[in-house]
Length: 420
Picture (cartoon, rainbow, N blue to C red):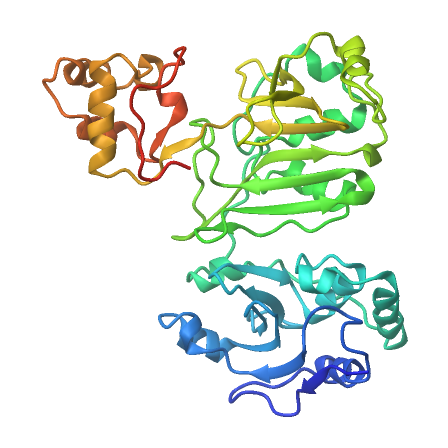
């Protein structure tokens, strides 16, 4: 059977292949192709200047690639300036970047557990992971303590971490009475929802309770990241791009951000029922018997008209920025999320200004969303000012659907340029 190809003898100019990577490469060369993941092999290569011409000099000076993925993405070793080991980072084929591990040892350990968040390496059967785990144990590889490295921020020119956030990182909201009706594990989920990832509560929950790593940041190219803990029945979505005014983007560098816990999916492995509803509920009638009539019904898919999916929604805070939703469509699904709008025009242009002017003259804009600009809104409604002025002053993050009044019937005019 075909083996992996390994070429680690010579490193690119100015670099050295770490001894551990050399040993690992010799072992990988003996493994059947596919045993450890979907890649062809290991090879020490200079990072192509084409990946980022403006950052090529720094990348090639401080890093080199050692593993190419089928989609063209690269795993690279980066000198962080902090010993004992270079960090492992991802240069994505679509321009995305992130730290995979703070050291080569940590990377191999994550690989053996299927937790690198690189699907081509994580989608390996138990036999492949067992082989790697046994090799690491035989080599007595231990993960060193290493300072968290933010590759995206480093690439953007940031070399130090930002000042730690206060204990309440992000909006602090008063919980509703419903939160107390949740089990202790789900109350903990509710307590981190909407907080920044640098909040002590979030750090403790992810690293100690779930036993997982937190990403260092999100970026212009990668606005969200996930933390998955299947054994705990929890998956978190982290994003800086939450379309809710209470959750503004928090810049770390020019192109990187500190995200919020924007959504949490809960599954049966959490080990608690949801407000008394069993996870194995077999019908909507069974769920209704416990929760009462559904909040509403929706279609299973966007292109369908039939409303077949029942859902129940509750606010988790008194200002209704956070919510819990239980959905039943053949089976139960549970989501904690920050309530966010839909982007109608994420990057305003001339068309956006024309639409805002049109909407203002017909009373389609919600005055409650423009309390800082009532005079301008009134002037536009009287055709004494242009809609582009309101866009410039009040819509720095674009036009959202909740900027419009919730009126019955179809909208008489829609933006057809960048609806998302």
